[in-house]
Each structure stands twice: as C-alpha cells, then as structure tokens.
Image (tube, rainbow, N blue to C red):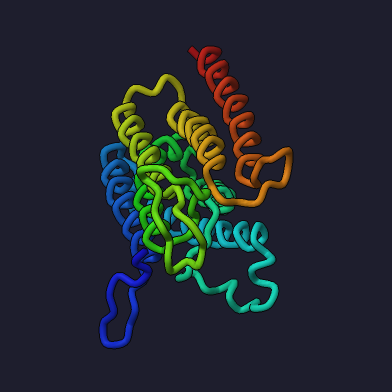
Length: 249
C-alpha cells in the first residue's frame, strides 16, 4: 500500500485521488481529440464531461455509503472523506448517465452518438483509477494464498488477499484496447456503448466472486445484482438499436 504518493509543504497528495484524476485527464484528452475529428465542438464535450464526471463522483460515493452504511454510523462526517477511497462504479454510472443525458439534450447532440464517442475511453480512465484503489488498499479481494496475493498491511485487514483492483484494471485496459480499434467499425448507433456495458457487467459479475464484499442475495453482492440488471438492459437495448438500424436501411 502507498496511500500518500508525496507531500509538499504539509500538503498530502493521496494515491487514490491522484490516480482517479489522472485517469479522467487522460480519457478527456482522447475524447476531445476524437470530438475534433467528428466535427463536434470540443468545448461542449468538455462541459458535458465536467458536469457528468462531477455527478458520477457524487453517485459513486452515495452508492458506496449506502452499501457500507455501517462504516459511517459512528462518524457521519467521514462520508465526505473521499481521499480515503470509497466509490462504487455502478453508482457513478447512474450519476454519469443522468447528467450525460440532460447535458446532451441541452447541447442538442444525439445521445448515443455522443456515448459511442466517449465509450472507448471510459475503461481507460477506470483502469487507471483502479490502480489507485490498489495503492490505497481498498476494494481488496478475499483471503487466498495465491502467487499474486498481497498483504494490505495499512488497511488493517488480515491475511494475504487477491488484488482484485489490479485484475479489474487489467481487464478494463483490455476493454479499452478492443473498443479503441472498434472505432469507425460501428454497425449501428450505440454499438460501442452497448458492447462495453455488456462486457463490463460480465467482468464485474465474475470479479465480484473474488472480492471481500457482503453477500445480500443468494450469495451475490450488491454489484453482482446490479451487473445482472445492467447486462439484461444492455442486451435488450442492443437488440432494439440493431433492429431499428435495419429498419431504416
């Protein structure tokens, strides 16, 4: 673990926040370049992105607090301690999607066209952010004596644990590579977006079996239940968009 990357004149820079910010910045650079290629005003994309990311962080934190409410019972102010980590992707996805929808309508940009533009770079930001989780010692896996298991000493959790953060990061980086080279090969509007939603929901469902999280429903975690819902939604949406594109040909 390496929660604090460095400190300068008393100011501490936390690894989790730094990596999340770095992932967002890298993804934003890619997205703005992509917008220019498609003659979409980069300023509008930047405004949409900033508002959506802000709402994403709020949604991700709210979901985490709800999921781990017992950890905040005796110290409510710690809800705002974002530097300690504690975001859930699905909460962020809900916050991001809502803000993204309303901002796209505000700028009169087709929602799915815009979603396909940014989607290839979302897993890149996510992959970098997950490295921050590893450095911070949160989102760790179950106790297991494997060649890749590590000890999160400063997190006050016993035993060697599977570094699910790095597994998640590696898988997301593969998603980024795949989607990056799928650009320009879309078969219909929403192709890249629905592909990512399907791939992510499957990977998250499987990785959750290795996570040290509370089981709430038939031995499944909150995120696994949400993964099933997201997978079904993405499949239905994909089939609908595919049929709609064939009807307009």
